[in-house]
Length: 185
Image (cartoon, rainbow, N blue to C red; front, top):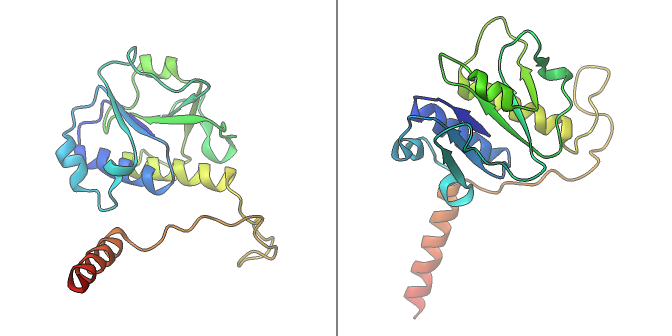
């Protein structure tokens, strides 16, 4: 998940944290005026220790893994509406700045352009979360939605990975175990 030209570090930080929550392989920025310190301030999940973050000064310098499609999220006349989009198996998604959207140069670089079917533009962090959620639900291993309201009537095809307790709980357990080990020595 990436951003181009974003100017608010907290928006970028929220996207970075959300990308980590949805299992992204990396995050990136292009021509962004952000502070990594501020980016990490909105993160309560240890994202910077778990998810690589790449910064590129220009669209031309931007590198993606081989075979990775670039999907732009932008409101254009020819964009595919997100619920009708078939997500590529290997893809990176890029969103534009808070006020300007993606540059023409970035749109030209994209393999696909999608838009979220809303009446007006959304906050960039929320838009990123919606795209990641749509990707996960369309490519994930979930039970089909039932015809009637309510939960699934079919079993889930496979197990959705658990994420465990929050980071603060894991750290507390580690500190308590270390204190107990020290007391036993």
